[in-house]
Length: 169
Image 1 (cartoon, helix red, strand yellow):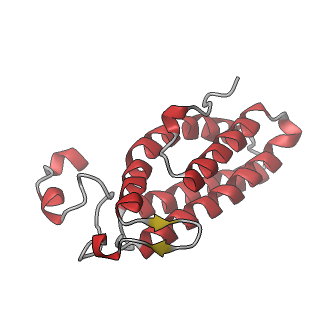
Image 2 (image 1 turned 120 degrees about the horizontal axis):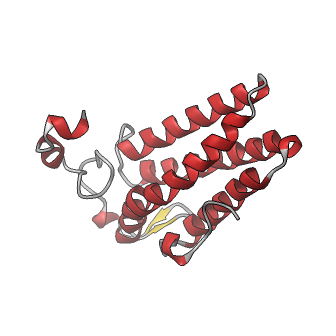
């Protein structure tokens, strides 16, 4: 059985996001269950899906006034970079690294979904954003300034300034 199973606990009441997340979970399970011959193709499919998945969420953030350097988008970039490095190592003869990375993704993904993606989904609902058409139905609800941080409680500059340096070290 895969380390991560789709459940309603991962659903965020944003159908396109939820469908994409469910696909991610299925592709991750395919990696975990792949035999040695199918491992690298399964990983490539997961990377391709994740690249599109993260690009879509980053576009939603850009369309609804998230700052381009927010930590949600930054986390997307880092995860994709690490996934790409894993693919390169597997192509160079170290396929076991992909099995380890899949296990780590199974731990990371629910945390990411239930924090950063949940904050994004809430924000998108507040501004009436239609992810399919890209229409903001409540433009007056858009923030006056771009959102920094993760899009949740840590999003204001004041909240970030109050985080003790030891908390991020």
